[in-house]
Amino acid sequence: MRFSDKTTTMAEAIARIGDGATIMLGGFGVPGTPFELIAELVRQGPRGLTIIKNDANETGMGVDHLLEAGLVKRLVSTHIGLNPRAISLMNEGKLEVEFCAQGIMAERIRAGGAGLSAIITDIGLDTELAVGKQLVEIDGRRGVVETALRADFALLHAETADPFGNLSYAATARNFNPLMAMAADRVIAEAENVGPLGVLAPNQIHTPGPFVDHVVPMAAVTEEYAVVRR
Image 1: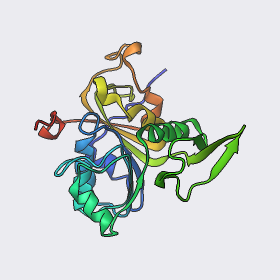
Image 2: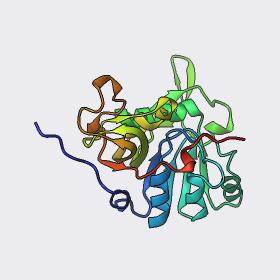
Image 3: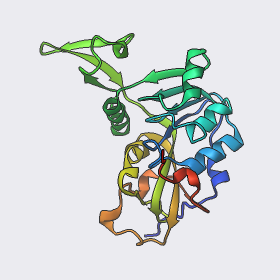
Image 4: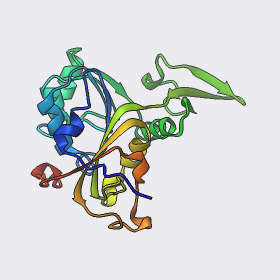
């Protein structure tokens, strides 16, 4: 059996993303965020994007570049408090923001990858997080219907990959990446190291290759990937 070679250039991978796309971005702050793919997305400039990411990064990093370029119409996130630009755009009505509790966001993405339509939770009941959402009662327990999250594309960051798309993440950089790989129609992964088939032992693979469409070898690891020091 021959395994397909999914490696491609960053420009070719991102060129598949058009205006109005919904994009999941892996990462929790810095760890696991695909900064180089985001930079190429800014360079190519598709507009009217919906971005699904745990956070809005900080000024001058990741999502902030997309916001500065005016490419984002809607942001689904757990918090934006570290990004003054995101806060300003939201308050000015230039950016639609949907806030979601962090665990619920992860579960909504997991549900999307599992083919479910929604989950039911009591998190957010009687708060602003439940405004406008369907409420149900099951066996005497009230719950909020949280729709599953899926995307046209997921952009991920891996430490190591092989040409077929098997991915391994470094420590906490795993975070949302494996879930998003299952919940998008097309998955693009940048990798610090790309080795031949067999470079990853079976128990080192966090995302299996069948979930990945394109593997982009990174030319360098820029300063954005470093741990932020204050």
